[in-house]
Length: 193
Image (cartoon, rainbow, N blue to C red; front, side, top):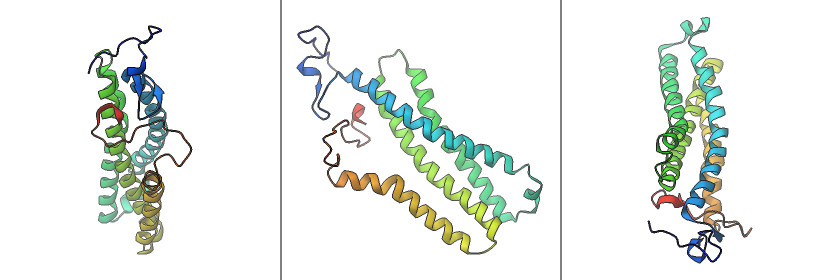
């Protein structure tokens, strides 16, 4: 990564600091700082939900009715708790990553890897939500309708979390609003992700 020469005002944001993908006049470091702030806001939403869900899952095993669960339901519970743990690790991981790399002048790389961990965490959260619903609905309904309901909700999660964003990208990325805030995130383009 080369040094960005100072602009005419000495700010380091001369023409070479313009990010052509965003239309912003910012250096790579400024862009990484902005993206990190955006990612933290997204993580706050996801982490809160995961913590509540995981707390619920941990409490289930201590309920008197847990002893009455079938072996299949106990296995679903174990898988669900493991998925919840993996989800929490992936969504809390960016904080640890940032903390361990702070001061090492690696902010763009930190943003890239934190973004990847967040995407992994969202995929794991999808699995955790489906598994949790399966456990609850099997206990509540005791029939095959639980599978159909979970399948329907899984489809809804996929549409809300993945299909709508991908559809927006396919329709032109910015929806015609003129907001070119971010370059496309391909996952392997360094700080652009």
